Image 1 (cartoon, rainbow, N blue to C red):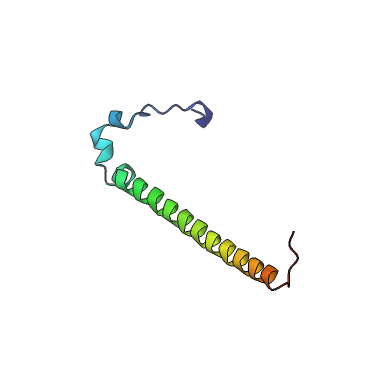
Image 2 (tube, one colour):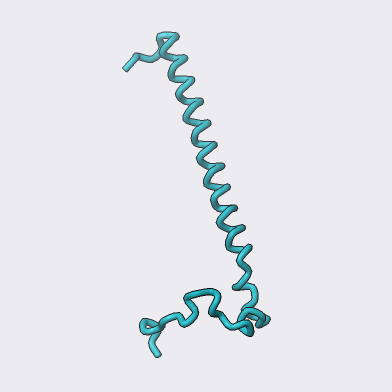
Length: 76
């Protein structure tokens, strides 16, 4: 059977048979908390990057305003 014709018979996680959930090679796939933890970690990393970017932008803006006040930068 070609993969392009494949349809997942278990699209609803509640329909997955218990013997799949408890199989030694498959049980890691069914740990819901793993996916949630990964999403939370990714979100935290993105937020941290945005925070650092915002801090850098604020520092640049403060330096620009200071240069304008000192007359070293033209007001545009």
